[in-house]
Amino acid sequence: MLIVSGLYKTFNAGTVNQKEALKNLSLHVEKGDFVTVIGGNGAGKSTLLNCIAGVYPPDQGCIIIDGTNVTRLPEHKRAPVMGRVFQDPMMGTASDMGIEENLALAYRRGQRRGLKWGITSRERELYRTLLKTLDLGLEDRLSTKVGLLSGGQRQALTLLMAVLKKPKLLLLDEHTAALDPKTAEKVLVLTDHLVKEYDLTTLMVTHNMRDAIRHGNRLIMMHDGRIILDIKGEEKKKLTVEALINRFGRASGEDFAFDRALLS
Amino acid sequence: MVQILSGAVSLGLLWAVMTIGVYITYRILNIADLTVEGSITMGASIAAITMLNGTDPYVSLFLALLGGMAAGLATGLLITRFKIPPLLSGILTMIALYSINLRIMGTSNLSLLKKKDFSEMNTVYTPFESLGLDRNEAAIVVGLLVVATLVAILYWFFGTEIGCAIRATGNNPNMVRAQGINTDTTVILGLVLSNGLVAISGGLIAQSQRFADIQMGTGSIVIGLASVIIGEVLFGKNGFLRRLISLALGAVTYRVIIALVLKMGMPANDLKLFTAITVAAALALPVFKEYLITLKKSARAGE
Ligand SMILES: Nc1ncnc2c1ncn2[C@@H]1O[C@H](COP(=O)(O)OP(=O)(O)O)[C@@H](O)[C@H]1O
Ligand SMILES: [Mg+2]
Image (cartoon, rainbow over all chains, first blue to last red; front, side):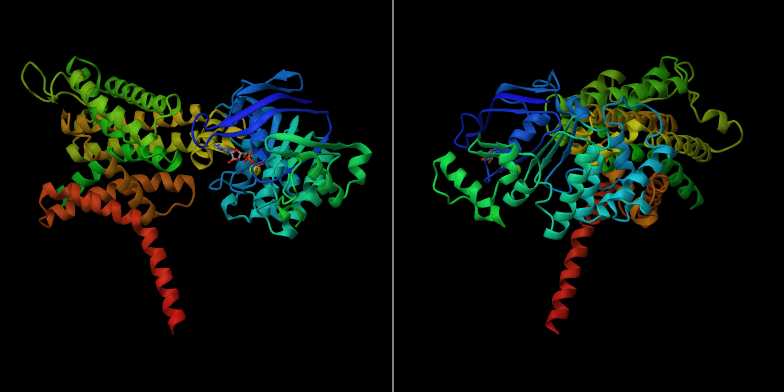
């Protein structure tokens, strides 16, 4: 479903701030895979997702989604096959617009937009039904401005918007990092549920090892712009935090001073 | 006094069209677009020169609209294609328009007088004047018709798929791109629409005053902003229809305030200073409020 090969990305090339964020990174993701991505701060996780989404072009390498080479396509042309949720709850929605208006924007992803009404009454029914499944009471607040929602509510809504058109790829970049632990857990449960229900191929970046182990069927660990661990199948199912830390130490050749925060 | 007020109301309604244009960029797209200073003059210039060459007054307004849209397109391309910051892009187009407008008119001001006998030319106001209305009344009728039509059209437009995409762009361009929308296109569309309206306003003003002047755009952005803010403060921001109507009311209120302070003896040369201070104060309002709140809190903590 997703083939990333030989990806390089350097920021601020030729300046003192030069940073090689991705170094010859390759990754194949099968249809239906749910890959959790873990790694320290600055490992290049967000850069990888942003390159896949087309926020900026890679310096080298190519990205193929479901047989289509998208490497040179601008962000908005790739969006139809992608759903995204970001770390910042503000990032995924238009805060001055209503819940239904946000959903309607997402509902038209991949369609030509014209002078038809931006939202129809039939859609409203659909949104109400879908929002009910979130169990946050949002189904009765369709016209409420999204800016008035809590972070958790916004992330749940963004998640719903991301999956609404059954994308080929779901990209989640630490989408629970800004939430309190209880809300984060709720959003993760919802994520699992939606990924199953819509049968989505997913890349989920998380800063939490336990979440990375508990969710998905495959785990990759990034370090310094590379993938240093790739654990799948039975091995992934049996994985523990301790084993992961040990393997990180061996794979990176670095002493494990690596963010203890990851364990929290 | 009645004469002064009806003059202020008529001028306010003609400037309301411009205010709606400023609202589209400043509030919807979240861009302070200085192009308007040039495009309002451009609208006046195009209307004046085409009418002097025998064009129908309505057609001249349409040509003004096209000119304004082209100006908006220029700024839009500077922002999106060449990645020049919006404020600077607007300034560049504005400066360029100064020369362009001089070329359009061939001189720095034009009077709308017939070549033969120097009598006044027919304008879009003439049909209403021939019904027995005076100049201001005719301008009020035309202004109301135009503003009502525009409010209806824009209310519809910003509810369509494209309109929603433009509104979301000013709110969160990242999200809009993630929904498969080209934000370059939506930014350009908004600027084209805005400057088109501003140019119509310029054309209407020129026809009403029976002249066009190269200086008429100077400071117009601040007048537009003042009108937007007065409208919001006095008539609220709830609901899009209400906001659109509040823009017209804001523009009229601004003119009435100006007429009153002039009547009270403020020298006309101080007008722009007065307007600038008013807008600065209105924009600083949130900061003042916050300051007051913290002041209150600390006062309470000190008790
Ligand atoms: N837009 C950018 N401009 C400059 N440097 C960047 C940019 N984005 C990321 N970086 C740098 O690239 C490296 C990888 O960043 P990122 O992919 O955000 O890491 P992660 O998401 O794994 O924490 C970091 O050193 C970061 O500072
Ligand atoms: Mg990151």
